[in-house]
Length: 115
Length: 115
Image (cartoon, rainbow over the protein chains, first blue to last red):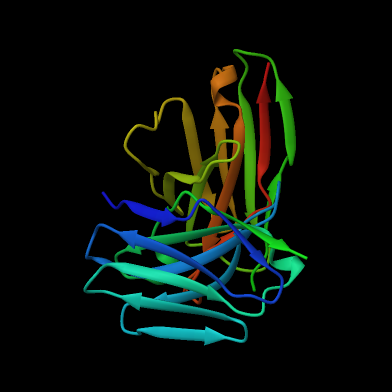
């Protein structure tokens, strides 16, 4: 089955700086790669996603890049703010893509924004 | 986005009892529902996928006789943890998607504590 590795497990950055979280996946058939933000005790919130036919996607301060050849994808957050502090998970799914297939999650990154 | 609810939000039970968790899609028809489990400070792990009117598909290592899933309608799926034990204590999160969507919508989660 699919295996998703995520690094780093903890990331501390100064407010205003950029944060980068990286994930690799094992199954070349995966074609949907969402990123979720989860606050303690709450549900995961989709912040951005990318599909295999696209190499990069951006939404305001958040961007995701995908390298299908190398089987890795990254989350970039610019101009970080205190409210960005949370646990971030990458995920991958195989099949028709989008929401119709179960997700394999990375282990998560605890992002800490230092004021 | 679409709204998914879960009930109860928190449950405490004695070892050996069974607990039922409900997952509802409030404003759309959920053709597929997923059940995930999240242990403290860990990632989400897919337990099973259920399609309305069909038997659930369980992930490797998940006991189907212990975690009973019923998806009898397009708006409701239930997860019953039978003969619960302390090691079943976890955060159980459902998600669902519909034919008009290409992402999963997560419920708020159910915190299960087995004494």
